[in-house]
Image 1 (cartoon, helix red, strand yellow):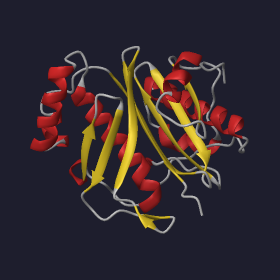
Image 2: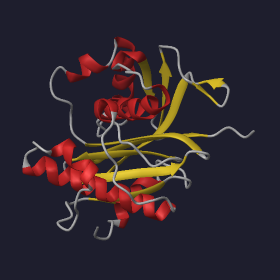
Image 3: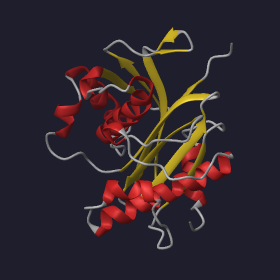
Image 4: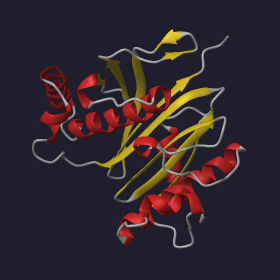
Length: 230
């Protein structure tokens, strides 16, 4: 693929640790091509959807190569989760104006969640569908202190990152209502699980901690669960 856009990688570096390797673009790569095992996921997709999916997969292979892992195709698995090479964890995201991937070795990082969204208000009714009264009360308080931040979109994006971190550990669905999401003004968030969590390195995961950033018209949220020292 073409060269990644370094400012976007810098944004990802602000929300992910150094052990996670990232690649990102703000446009579609006309030279990118899908691996045969990736084709089925967009066989009936419109051209715009196919282009962003293809570029995001190219970002993933670029990140894999720089991690030192096989830069192979990443097919879509159960519930559309990417299927990574053995020993690798990662996440892929794409939205208007942004395509990105993040990968790490699974002996260092147990799971990764990554999501990007335009920094704009959620459509009418969506916030009520993805949050409860307590979460909305917190967002109102945060909005009084930082009214230029779209806290509703941060909550939505962070819950997307939570799901992406959760699913590889459990192979189970996690609804928006199953995590109490608490963003903070310092660029962090905590998602306390309302359902039994997976056991990782002998300890039940009861919450995911992550980071968020607003930059260049985007909200980016991310989670990287580190391996516990033995």
